[in-house]
Length: 192
Image 1: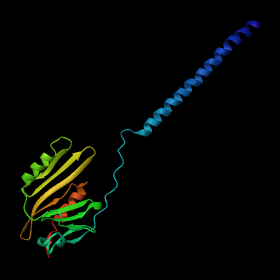
Image 2: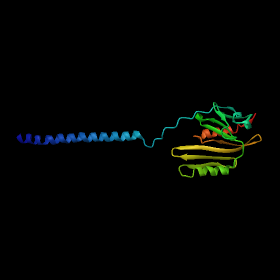
Image 3: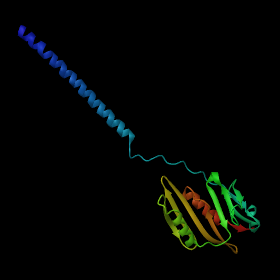
Image 4: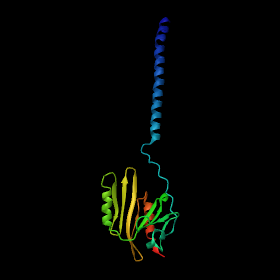
């Protein structure tokens, strides 16, 4: 009996030690499952949240007379609350900065090949990338891409009545929709 008791005393600690190791192994397994679950929650390939939708422009007729005597009687569409200015020589400008709108009517036809060369030269330092999406004598359209941003631009030669005009975005805009709104406004230039 004494031998049985001795062997029990010797084996019980081993039995408890094995049981403790089992609990430690179960805990490690649970920790691994939790780590795997939290890494699944992170989803590194998830798409970034989309930018909020751009508010639509409410376009109204703008009298271009404040741009100078040459523009008296001329009108074009621009955003509600925009300002008409003649601050760039003989050009008429419709600007609504908070609405990402800055349109310029220059009272002459522009050599768009020359404009293209100037755009390329301005972006030749390699910090930005230029891509021309339209390159005709009537329309020069391009994007400039930098680190984390893209700017949409165009210059358009057109006729309004007998007047030869270049219509263009003064500075690039942040979206294709804004670029297209500028182009649509170009077509509204008219003498009343």
